[in-house]
Image (cartoon, rainbow, N blue to C red; front, side, top):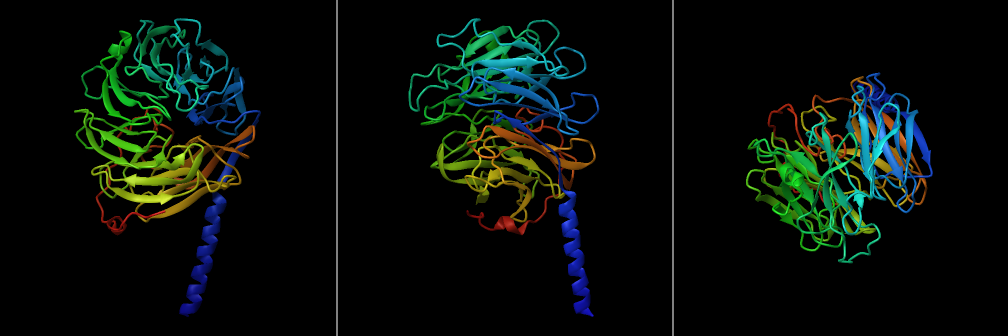
Length: 493
């Protein structure tokens, strides 16, 4: 009798397991020719149907052609596509500058390009004029932009963005043009202010805008330096930038041999109600900096590694403190022997989880897939040089990796988006993939999982759920629980 019961229980388990797999599905997948995309998808409703649509830019690094595209979130059909003069690797900024009730799109990248696009029609509103007020070496590359309050009294928020990075400079060449922080009119693209970075180094920085110490003065956090030259993470103010002088900016942490290509993020790590700065250097130094004192709370240096990925923030370790999840590669671009995924206790900097999986340049994410009130770490990675590509989450409490997506493809640097596209209560994943690293085409895919959307999306997109690089909102406070696995040594590769 017990044997018969066991048999039927096993059959039921297998049936339910395959039903679960069958329910998870590709909703749509669209292919784009003659380009690849290193940008990360951004989502917003452009059609007014209450379904989130996808904005993504593309191009080829050495070419002078690229696009900014919008795709219908319902079926993947192309809403509009704008031709531009080169690779736009940046992720979009949304703001309704036309005041028509539909968010407009701001995006930049190579060939000194930064564009404003009408979100409804796909027509270019303005493009950055490279002939106006150029620095001695001319304008360089643009990075992800953020909004600042109205600076030109037209009633509209304006734009802050970093410009720098010479794409033709040879590795180790010290003669790199200095980076600049710009304030642009969101309506016209006019330069309202420009400030040379304080150390005169190059910049590749996606910056952060936030009133950290709550004094009604906006702080600006940005990085300098690159893959072969030193730099720092700096703290200045919008007020100083508008005066065209940030020479008194505060260096928060400095790189010894290399700079800060990965963007900083903000989170209240030490739970004093003041945002702290979390940042990974290009040479594998992870730093958490006290937002109140500007002093380092803790650091971990992963010697021999380098990172182009932003840290993810989440509640991982079985308590109410925020923790940090990173991805870093052992070696130097483009030759890496392995990539490490490391989760650290935010309170102490102690390594709690360490593993090694595949090859990936994208940034990790955080989302509570299991519904226990604690986030899992999410990764997009390539199992080998030619794939397959996998998107998986790590349940830190169980030290278990769960595969969500797998296809015979690769992904270079695009970070997936996690959320609910159509408000049906199930988690969707929007991701980019290529047939091969040598190809000139890519696919954009919407995959619907069987997992329910959690009450709080912790870190569900590149540079945060709010696209601002800031962990914010009111996550539910889970009850501290005993997790025996965390008393063990970190899992090794």
